[in-house]
Length: 160
Image (tube, rainbow, N blue to C red; front, top):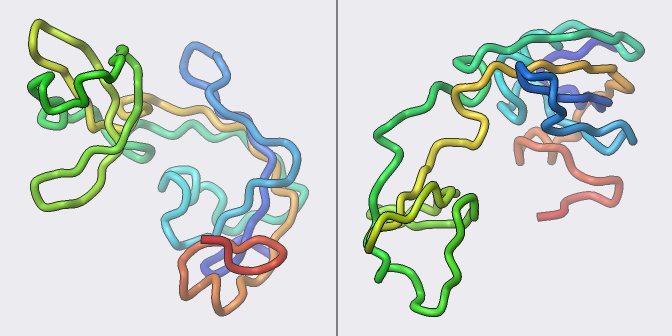
């Protein structure tokens, strides 16, 4: 069975940056995704389309087809007093912030300058070219519930 829309593919992969350093990896068969649902970066999903179990490939995904280019408008100064007074803030911390419209966004604490905290809402891998070494372990038809929910469910069903 080939990877195509509404199929679940299980992968073993290693993700590295341009410097060859490992960013992430999964080799135990625990990484599955629903093809065509936007669950993985677009450049990798496109490269996997039509592939079969047992195939191994290397894919280089440019930033625009991964997590996008870095957007300087997503970096903001926030007054320190908007954080709990006892919070021990450190550069590199990740946390959830709410935008003015009430939506939650993951942000990284990028710096502290005087009474301001610099937060960056870009994905940590934004602006980076990604290198994937992928082996397709299995492909199956997605269950109706997985298609409706737009993601893979575990062996015992729905796990939100």
